[in-house]
Image 1 (cartoon, rainbow, N blue to C red):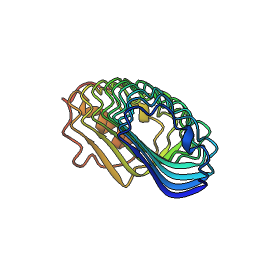
Image 2 (cartoon, rainbow, N blue to C red):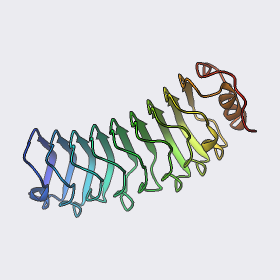
Image 3 (spheres, helix red, strand yellow):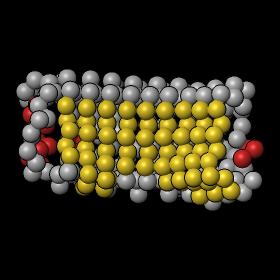
Image 4 (cartoon, helix red, strand yellow):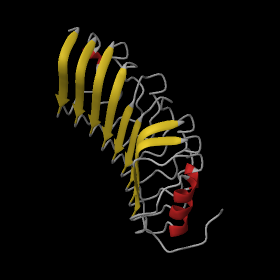
Amino acid sequence: MSWASGVMIRDCTHLESLRGIGHLTYTHDVVLDQLPALQSLAGWADTAQINNVSVTGCNAIQSLAGLPRAISSVQIKDNASLSSTAGLEQSALSNLEVDGNLALASLIGLPDQLAYLSVRRSPALQDLQGLENLTALAGLTIQENTALITLKGLEHVSAISMWLSVKSNAALTSLHGLSGLTTAPSTLEITNNIVLPQCEVRWLANCINAPVGMNTDNGPEGVCEP
């Protein structure tokens, strides 16, 4: 098989390898769903182009190594053993969505041309180290990461053009990881971070010359570093 409009592999409880799709050269979408015995994403790194890959419920996967380089968009959801995003360094990835990966503790290994990043429900993640090569984004979503304390790792991002959403991160205490940001995104949402001092929100708004607006449902006023 050299071309397919889409590939879906779902509910194969004993599948351990993807080597059977190694001859695929082009496809729009690949869905890997509920493959609990799959040990690795290796076997198709030479695929010429893939628009979108979704990996969900593959609980033995520990890294993203093996994904094709010519890939545009990846969704990684509910993979219980995935501990890092390593493996995408040389990819052409522009959109990454990470959601509900319980062991994910590191965002290392992402390409610097990434445009859209969403990190949600990652309870082992304490900071955003690994994103130091990013300098600009179109959209950034950081939501419901219960152990996330700081946005450290985003210091070199100077522009987020479309949206910035930092919402419902129960342990977040600082926004100073965004200290390099110089312009306001079209949409700014910083809400329901219950221990984040409100002065942190005001500090960021001042840095990017944006109104605080509705971004007030966070923690107490607090005392913030300048």
